[in-house]
Image 1 (cartoon, rainbow, N blue to C red):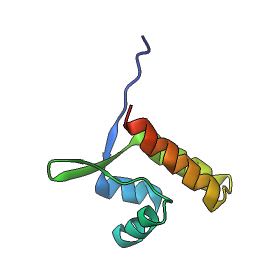
Image 2 (spheres, rainbow, N blue to C red):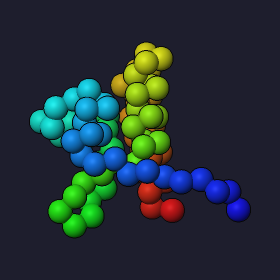
Image 3 (spheres, helix red, strand yellow):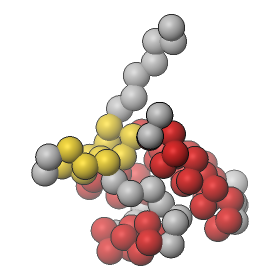
Image 4 (tube, helix red, strand yellow):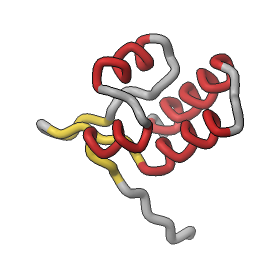
Length: 80
C-alpha cells in the first residue's frame, strides 16, 4: 500500500495559492475551470494536489479545454 498523505488547504489559503479572488473563483467553478471546494461543516477546502495540478496547467499555458479536462478528472477522482 502506498503511504502518501493528502493535505487539505483552507479556502482562503487555496484562493491565495491559485491567485484568484473569491468572486472570480466562483465564476471559474461555474465555467468548469476550477473544481468546487470540498465542504466539511462550516469549512471549505481544496486538496493540495488539486491546487498543484491547476497551477501547473496554467504555468505550461494549457488551454481552457485542457484545464476543463483536468478539473473534470479532479472531480471524478473525488467520487472514488
